[in-house]
Length: 311
Image 1 (tube, rainbow, N blue to C red):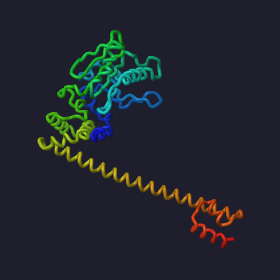
Image 2 (image 1 turned 135 degrees about the horizontal axis):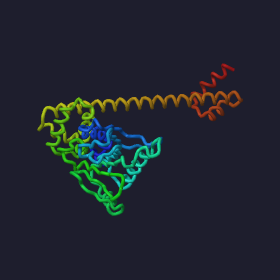
Image 3 (image 1 turned 135 degrees about the vertical axis):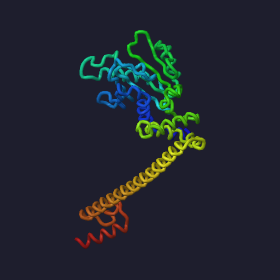
Image 4 (image 1 turned 90 degrees about the vertical axis):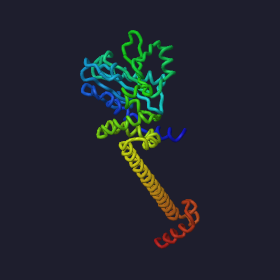
């Protein structure tokens, strides 16, 4: 595994995706409620994101949300993961579980639920399985957005492949990658971020994009605007702070470990001293007590001399 892959696997992609969805759907935000990692039931199962329309009859304008109904389940695979056949079934199960996890029977009608899968790469094996085994039709409604359809199927499903999205229409979802190479697109991202840098959603997404593509942003810096230089300076400063924090945490951990080892050693020593004294009290000679307590000669001599004085 190369260094860049190791670095990007540590990144928190899901919070960035959650922020990115809100940015992409900002035009419809008045009619949408966003829930991050919606918990299912009482056990640790959770939907990556849940988007609820306040008014079901108002259509979502944005291309990624045109399929939306009242309740919209979103499952996401980061750039270091892939969308598998079993992930599809798990997503369907989550949608069904969400429908049934209510206080009243049929409180959420199945007709009000949709399911969206978001993946960086096109899942060839899954698509083949859907077509050949489940007999679904896969149609590309617009660039990078596929509807998974079967006649009389009651649950609308769509697949969003972020690496195939149009840069103009879906800049922020398209940019959630660790393979950002086009300098023109980097410039576009930076400029839009610069206009919205006081917005926490943009900050959350941009943070991941820059960290996952740090080399590319560094290389682009020389050809670009002051905004990128400021951004890279902030990122470098943050990285230095992170490294310092890591070193401090390491030192604290080492000191804690050493203190624990010393305390444990002292505890063992105190225990051995008690055993030595008890052996002497029951009539053992010094050598017998020393062997039984497993202490060294110097300590045994010191303790034996105290024992005789106290006797």
